[in-house]
Amino acid sequence: MAKALETLANVRNAAIALLARREYSRAELEQKLRGRTPDGRLLMEALDQLQADGYQSDQRFTEVFVRSRLSAGYGQVRIRQELQRKGIGREQIEQVLQQHEIDSRQLALDCYQRRFGEEPPKDHKDYAKRMRFMISRGFGYDDARYALACKGDEYD
Image (cartoon, rainbow, N blue to C red):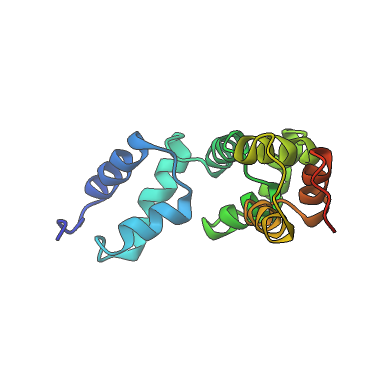
């Protein structure tokens, strides 16, 4: 088991070590360090200092996360859900998504082409499978249907 963090310096160092690997939201850092920090006030003080010093920023985390997920071919619905689970507020999520000026239909079409290429679905079952994939990636029904229709894959 990991060593307990009993001083402010130890908590800060542990958090900085985590942040050196990748960006974390404040809620994620709190969750990771809560089990190792017996004093909750100490943890909150350390997280406040990290934010004040610019080591941790929910805004920066959200921007990096959105860029990463968009380039990986995820839709806005899924991105919103994942960010909310990571403790980011809805207003901040919407602000960052609006900054990216996302064309959800083009994003859905690109995702579809990467996954399925030029091969049309074999039958209704394959069409349904492709629709489920698109929905699970965070695209709305209209965007998923658009992506399939653009490829001449209209079954319904």
